[in-house]
Image 1 (cartoon, rainbow, N blue to C red):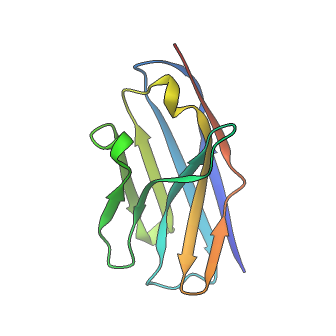
Image 2 (cartoon, one colour):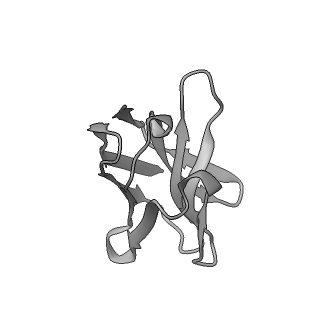
Length: 115
């Protein structure tokens, strides 16, 4: 069983910064895909950024140049640094961990950007 524990998020004014972290525990295999998704009210969940199973990073066009994903493999933790935040970044952010045939999700953390 895999558990994902998220921290960070909160309320910030437009132009500000926030950081998120997600620690994974349990049966974690080395070749996985781990990252962040978000879901705004009335919208579908969308990819924000993740590490592919090959170790490369992947970003949504809307966050390129503003968000940075990083990880600490020794701690099985992934981070998301969010800079130059915009009101449209407001959403619940979910950590995800995917193996072939399985997907795990964190509980979600709210990010609210005021204008």
